[in-house]
Length: 498
Image 1 (spheres, helix red, strand yellow):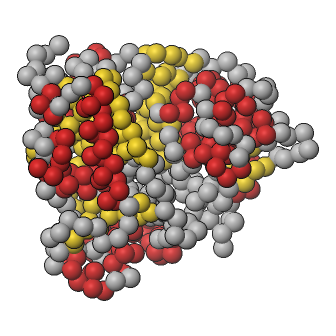
Image 2 (cartoon, rainbow, N blue to C red):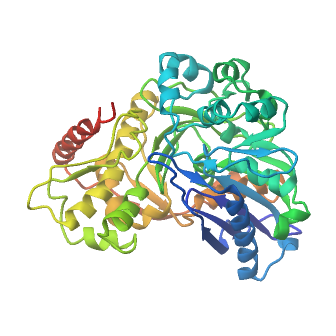
Image 3 (cartoon, rainbow, N blue to C red):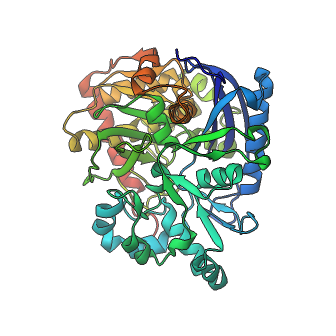
């Protein structure tokens, strides 16, 4: 391995429910981890917010915590990379650096009416930014904020207000630079997929001023050095940034067209590398930038975004009290051999890919007196696998080569029940890598490439190792019958919101 003056790389993963910092060694091994949760704020039904100042303080705390755990200091870090919850939207004062309000989280649905108004021009949006009109993405959230405060809009037009996703916020707090990377910019509905720059026509459609937008830079790029306010990262190059799902694609070393990964977390996200040209989907997928290393050609991806997977297990714990800790869902589900005919469609804020139905709401279908909480636990795990299958089927229909193997990562891969069921319903092997922290690893890889810590992509690919492979065992007729029941349950979830 290449000799380096500073022997470690750090990655900050600012996620939906918590912030983490992981320190990696030259082989991509985990040296230390620190994590801290932040508050979920629900002002109204369908609204989800975060306190950006709390997030910043937590990022500082976990960075210091990860270094302390390993007995390291900032002098031991060659660089730091950032990965983040993507579409979550924040506005802050350009002069003071203080947020003008809470961040609007990607799960938030307050822009539903605006998105409905945008729907007739869906083809226009897809053709330029690769995304359909949806409450998911950042652009409509910014429009919503400016429409409700004329003074804020006037200040934004003068460049006195900064917009950013959470990567932009952290880069700004660490370095003072107002910048984002191509992967996060591709989730705003404001960036042209071909030019990798803010699109004047898209901005005009949403009536948003360019003066408030950050500069767009490659994923593996030196954004600047940590300032004095960066605490434990003062003087450390901030050299990588990717949205969390693109970071996982990068960490799973899916560098060739046709390679795919799925990250199982609060939501689940299946990404397929499609090469150096964007592929516009006609089957409910979104087109996104996968990554860009330096000034090289970007790699594009097709993505299927699923809003609620791990969050369904949290709901069983927090709202129903069926379990007291998330891992218990596996033990409970293992006490029964099947779902008892019960199917859960967790459309808490509508259905994302490939359906894109904001009118959907969650249903539990097939209930009988026979169904127990164990069946419900198993159905909740199976709901994740069925949603991933819906996305994979759309992906296979749109790509030239079917997915032959799925690389899996994220917290839910600890569930052997889920991973086996996923292999069964997809009919292909599901592989979990030795290093499952692939989101952080991808951010670390990007930062390391930017500063020469790792020389090239081939070096990173050589480091990837499989930990466990699940082979499909379910008979095709049984899979098809169960899939038919799942599709009927999905239909029952539609047309709920008038």
